Image (cartoon, rainbow, N blue to C red; front, side, top):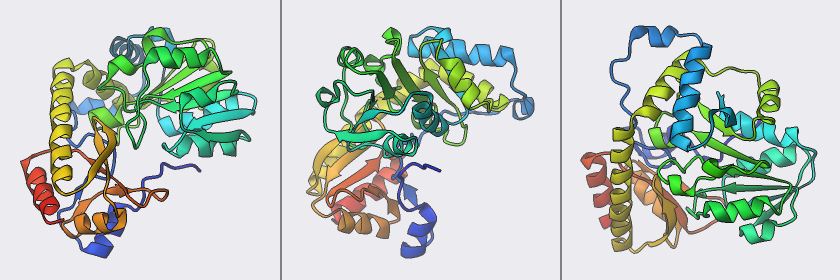
Length: 321
């Protein structure tokens, strides 16, 4: 089974540096989640229905700027990542690197020849091109017209837009090429990691094949909660503003600590710390969990703190580095 490369879990960190009130800034998920509030009790007992699915799909279409017929809700975006390579004849795949390792691992498991590349210009003539936009962990981004041109030069194009909800201007969804598949997830932007809800956007002729390959239905509670969350535009607008300002604030704190900004996006920032192991250990002693990468000795990723308590502890810790 392929899993996302998230490093040690919080229990491992606590075992090494002590239990207590940890601030987990290691994952690219909004720490200020959409407030579900007091949902009706029957939501948690709801079965998936055609009406609830249609409501979610229409809400998602309005959010993404595409047609409802182009949307397939999925219970697990990771499962879609594993299944898509098996829907196409194996061949040569080009994958932007460094990025989330899950795409390359799923392709290799399905018999594809995978070539990591640094730019979309190097993807021409591939049977399948995979781009995460914005990219994780460095936050690189590509304009939709650039990806549309790439789609014309490859067999199929997969664009993972899990981090694109605060940047609709980057999305390929409003003008989706026939040979492109776009992945979206509710977890990062809305902060609902346990909801198990994502979407595959593609030509309507391709979606039934994906649905047949993974027949698991999205749960009734996820259908209802997802539709409510995605329809809450006031919350979304406020969240975009908070994270845009918070990213600048975090960059200032990190720069004052002697780190150099190396990229990032609305949910996290990436820094060249000079020594990622030492920097991560210093943060962990203050019970702040960060994310480093096995292929870089200097890069460290930090998520966005959610309130003044977390900001104060992080700022105090960085001042001592």
